[in-house]
Amino acid sequence: MMIRAKLTALAILVCTQSDFAAETIDAPEGSALAFKYSARGEQIYQCNSTNDGYQWRLTGPRADLFDASAAKVGRHYAGPTWEADDGSLIRGKVIANQKSPDGVSVAWLLLSVAAHEGQGRMSDIAYVRRIDTKGGAAPQTPCAADEAGQTSGSPYEANYLFYRAAK
Image 1 (cartoon, rainbow, N blue to C red):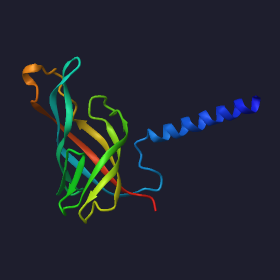
Image 2 (image 1 turned 180 degrees about the vertical axis):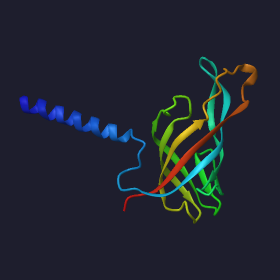
Image 3 (image 1 turned 120 degrees about the horizontal axis):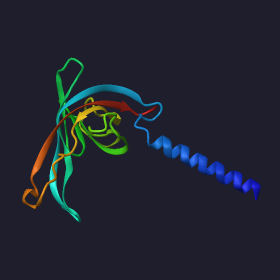
Image 4 (image 1 turned 135 degrees about the vertical axis):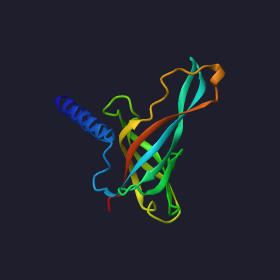
């Protein structure tokens, strides 16, 4: 009985530690940073009906991507999708998030790439991190029935780090 209790406790500890690791927004160990782009644009919210009335819901971003020299190199839009000026693009899926340190900006994220299109700088990207967010939160004013379907843009900035998978 004592051995079974110790094994159960060990199993709980292992599960807890792996669950904790899945909650980090760090790219998986061994991933290599390929490039970093800053984004400037807005997060778009739409007024939608809910069980409790009406609420602003995120429909996606609309932003331009810039390299370290401030040259525009692509765009970021719903999907979420990142499209490079060379025509290559990726679509991501959120796998972890973390509240922004300022508590009012959109969350920091880790996304895995769910789809690739085209050949170019996005072709071998496996993960994307969104960090250093400023703004982008849902409108603070509630929406109502007469605003149903209307959209509102919330200005935001962020840094996106693009990673290749571990080899």
